[in-house]
Amino acid sequence: MTTTMTAPAARKHWIEHWEPENESFWESTGKKIARRNLWFSIFSEHIGFSIWTLWSVMVLFMGPQYGFSAADKFLLTSTPTLVGAIARLPYSWAVARFGGRNWTIVSATLLLIPSIGAAIVMEPGTPLWGFLIVAALGGVGGGNFASSMTNINAFFPEKAKGMALGLNAGGGNLGVAVIQLLGLLIIATVGTGAPRIILFIYIPLIVVAALCSALFMDNIASVRNDKKAMREIIGDAHTWVMSFLYIGTFGSFIGYSFAFGLVLQNQFGRTPLQAAAVTFLGPLLGSFSRPAGGWLADKLGGSRVTFTTFVGMAVMTVILIIASNTQSLALFTTAFIVLFVLTGVGNGSTYKSIPAIFRTKARAAIAAGADEATEMLKARKRSGALIGLAGAVGALGGLFINLAFRQSFLDTGSGVPAFVGFLVFYGICFVLTWAVYLRKSDAPVSERGLALAGARV
Image (cartoon, rainbow, N blue to C red; front, side):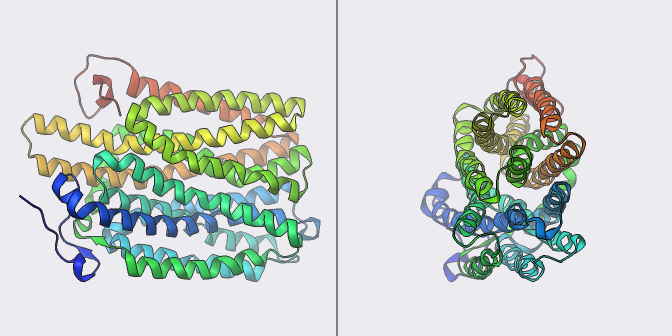
């Protein structure tokens, strides 16, 4: 029996029937629509990430004439990280309330506010509180990730979620590297006196992203019923385990993206141009490695990839401590860039694990006699809710990293104490991954011990 779909042919932008797990539906109709929504979601999210991390670039333009210390600049980069983390929760709920396409239009348009604000305040003499207000407004760019991922999760079948979510997130993460590369180009060609050029480029792009979302994206009607999913996952232990692990992966990626240039300037005496020349490499490679992490998770299992990633991150952090103590810039830069790559792989693998967790639970319920369609729909809703929640909690890791660097440089003039703290945290993460998802056990599948029964997520 061939499954048909109503509404999209007329481009009313509301899809009333969506069944991606139905192979016939997916091949005949769903795949084309899902991919179209994915590409335009990536574009909008990419711009959102660029605006969210705008101040990691702007601080490179803020020379002595601005009168700010290294601690002030770390505070400036911490502020949008915090606001972006908080914004992710309402942004993920907004998909269920307004529809994925509709909210993408709104969230893209909101990026105009911090962009125009930055163009106004970006000059010597503006007080720190003025910069902090505009930087806080830039946090809305961080919210785009949660709504985009929640929306795209609904479009793809389980077999394709790892790659689709990896591409969506990786393409968004790439916005960090692109804006930093643009900053490098501007500093190298016209110097540190023209930061507004960045904004004059991005403001038109924001308008284009909003228009493309309006013209080419769709809402899935069934997602409107997802409002209760967040309440349903709050009491699930896996919700908090995955959120904690995502602090280690995505929190590291976004935190280091904000801080890398400042660390190079303050610990190794790099000029703004010298710092900008390498800071974009980490986010660039970390963005490209995220889809690879999703692909590896599809093939090997998300938890295996996540565990290996955290071990590697711990090793790279040890090397960063050694390089800091020996003042080896080459070793430090190399280890930091490898660390970025590992955060990207871990981002992809942890997000692959989330749908797999709820799908495994659904299969257990179906085996016990529950209705298959009901349980699979419930799994999709809950995985979408957890993607939003984990994204919000994980982004807080970026705040912690910048605050840790700020305190470390205030107390010692070095980032080493901060790196020691990160090393301990990564150790906790790989032990937790092993204990919850990889350790063998004869315990039955349950809400408390899903993966201890051998389910590999």
